[in-house]
Image 1: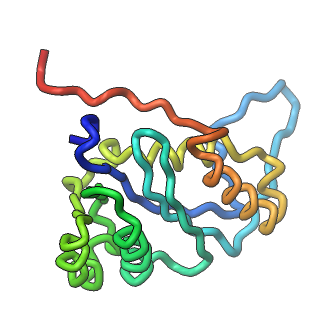
Image 2: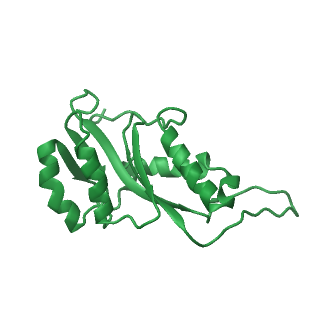
Length: 177
């Protein structure tokens, strides 16, 4: 239905970025020391709604992302709908909070529907790809040197999704061949 333009399909999720950089591995010459500074402290929590066409709505905050935050974001979305919209979410506590559940009827009247993925299926949420790209490709090591610079670069990268930064998703698979 999304491919035909009958509905808008968005995937939602959150992630945290902090001065503890994501370094999965690194190559170095024998005897060479490589390090990245790492600091405990404040992080930036990011919530994004992403379409397969790289349309990205995001919000960042230093407060925790809880049910109230999710309600706030979905409420804003529900007033900006152009057509029936389905938001795919995982079962994170903030997504299934009582506050979120209490608003579902109002959102459905406006054309916003929530679809919850089965447990332990992060691979079905394309927003996970966004977080991986952000942390491992789009942020540079020097971005992790100072909190303000990191937060700025995170916001810049998320704002560039769909224009300067794009993710190429595999097409939907319909049935078995």
